[in-house]
Structure formats: structure tokens, C-alpha cells
Amino acid sequence: MASFSLTSITPQRTGFSLRNTSYSYPSKFIPRKRHVFVTLATASPQTSSSITSEKPEIELEFVGPNPGSDGTYPVDKAKEISGEKLLRNIMSDNKIELYAAYGKVMNCGGGGSCGTCIVEILEGKDLLNERTNTELRYLKKKPESWRLACQTIVGNKENSGKVVVQRLPQWKK
Image 1 (cartoon, rainbow, N blue to C red):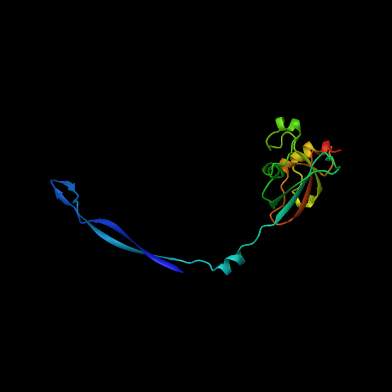
Image 2: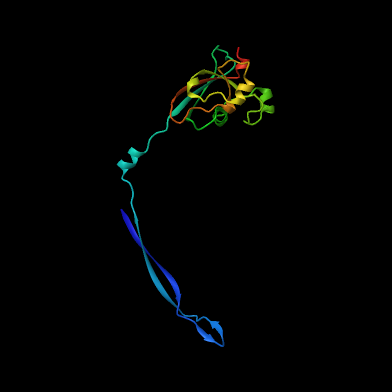
């Protein structure tokens, strides 16, 4: 524990006098000291490590829409803290392609008004939020596993696990 003291000096007037009914303030001040004591306490290293808890993480795998020359689909991986980001933002932050050619030019920027950020959830659907009203409107004739990346929150701040996402499911071969 550490402590220190501060002293502040507050100027105080000695008084005033009357001269022909006008007030005149003297230029002399008498300093008055005020003592302030501050005590600082810090937690010990053992206490702080027991307080700090790790936030749950979601592992994500993004499967490409077209197989490579060897016949396997390319997979990009990312890891994020549960419940903090939209799927669209995770893909953007990790430079994972989300849009087809038309969507790159005509997307709404994540506002949920264009339907160009469609993905398919292959695994881990239970780690995502429920479909929003926007998704229900744009995806009413699509499979239940299809989601809009701009409306999909990954995790709920308490769960952890793995989510596998198919990019551009409409192009899947």
C-alpha cells in the first residue's frame, strides 16, 4: 500500500476597507494550507489472476464455394470472442470473401436491406442468434441453414464452440 500527501495553498484576503463609499481590495494575501491525504491500495498478483476470467471464444471455419484443383474446398479459419461481432464483420476483419461480384458492388454495407451476404451454416447453428425479421423476409424460400451474415451474431457471450460456414452457398458445386 502506498500513501502520499498533497498540500494546496488557497489565497485568502485579509479584509477590505472603505474609501469614499467605494470598495478597495488590498493586494496582500495570506496563504492558508490545506492538507490532503491519499492512500492507494493495489491488489496482489494472486488476487488479480483469480478475478480475471477468460471470455468464451467461437472458432469459425469458412468453406469456399468452389473446390480447388485437388478436389477439396478451401477453408479459412478465424477465432472470435463469443457474442461480440456479426458474422459479416468477422469475415471482413479477417479478409474472407463474403460477396459475389454483384454483391461487392451492390451490397448495403451491413444494413440488412439487400440480401447479398447469404451464407450457409454447416455446423454450430445453436451458437448463433435466431433469425431476425429481416432474414425471415429475405430468406423465406431458402433452406433454414441459410443466414444473412450482416444479421448473424456469433455466440451469446456465454457459449463457446465451433461454427462452420459455407460462403456463397448459391454458387456451391
